[in-house]
Length: 249
Image (cartoon, rainbow, N blue to C red; front, side):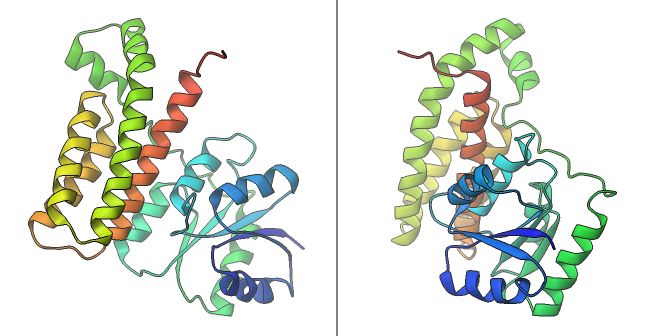
């Protein structure tokens, strides 16, 4: 009997998945990624079933935290989403998920996937951690600085950047909700420029993709694009906390 953590902001879905899995396994539940990290600190878990879109900390942010932590790096993760787009599957797999299932997953599909991952996890190749969110080599090439100078730059600039990026994300959330597409374009342009200047190439790419989609009138899937940007900002925050912790007062 395995110990499985179910992470979803919907009580109905948590209960439904629990009913399927409780016949064969012991389950725990969490309402978002942050709650799941708290649960992991107090419970031994063998596998995680997580939603992609959640408040507070979404599924991608949760994955990044898992794969960056030696205690949880090995845990197999099944990611659930309402979308069946191949782009979503590629995104979650690159982020460290072992498997992608579209909601609503059938009971046999979920059980088969859980059993397969549990059976082969000890022999399977562990998912590769995602590339660092800051390309230091690019920064050194662009600025002509040595490693120590790059460290000094990032230590000073990242806290300011993260604060500004977090506010831009809030502005994007509001603009998408209000369908203020010009504001979306402006926010993406601003964030793309500052990201590029710090070597945050993946975040710059995501901003460019959203900006281009709006220019082309393709406003479908904006929520998923926003989740990608939020998760990448979270990755940069994790990177900054790990490499440049703030001095205690």
